[in-house]
Image (cartoon, rainbow, N blue to C red; front, side):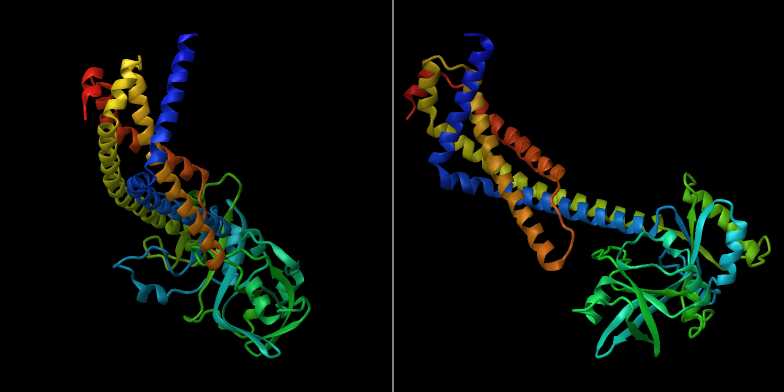
Length: 419
């Protein structure tokens, strides 16, 4: 028989002997894996939550537009020096400024004005949807914000220019007002005025940045101007500018600073009365928070696995002591040192893998429960499964090496005589 085949057979026998030893001590096996289970559970649960939140954040940012700049009066950078009283008195962007920006920018692909209308109440007969968010938008909004329709259509240019009383509603609003009928071409009441429904947004689910279209309605900006004072401090509007393909948003931001100063006729050293925001101002702080949470998860899980590793090492020393005579007989019959070493190393690794698998299954069951009950996109990725198994194997190698090495170096005569 070739040397490679001999080694392979000996390793196979070592693995089989390790599993037999674990099967004969099931209670001890379970108890010794508990620390590893808790450690893997903590680490992988945190990693799964962070991955899910990061995916949600990425989807939210992409829906807002990674290549979109926002001109408004409120900056998105918060802190102890946030001068809200000064920002509140800044003028709101207007449709006239939207037109001038479109004429003067060279790096923009599309521009749109959006006006917030929070805490609105929509009514249809005896049904009402309260606390919904409304957006009054100029016609090019569909070129800025990515969304899909489950039914109906977007505003025509004529409807937008004339300020017609037409509205698009989110899936949650449609379900609330029209549980059993098609809402298209039906009239709803908004601020005492009737609006005809022309479209329904496809369900998007919860969003980390609260920009899901599920509980939002859209009307033309000129329709809102008929009953809302757009220059009021109680109204928050913004101009969204999408960069041309291949143009970095930072370059677009620099151009917009000059354009807005020109549009508002600000002198060279006069402080700007506008803010130019971008999605990185929201996503970067959250990414830093995710990093801290990930580190905390590794630390907590690391302590649990440290305790579990000591438990595995202790159990392996007990196992070596219990099987000393058996080891002596194996060596007397010709078993090599590496055979004994591999046998006990495999036993320690299998113990840790069993604990890791229990931890991974627990995480998976929790993600399924959260998905079904809270409608959150929580998932266990293949990368995290591999990480959990790799960590389990690593802990098994570290905690099992010294007991396995000790077993492999036993003198066969002394081992056989041991009681």
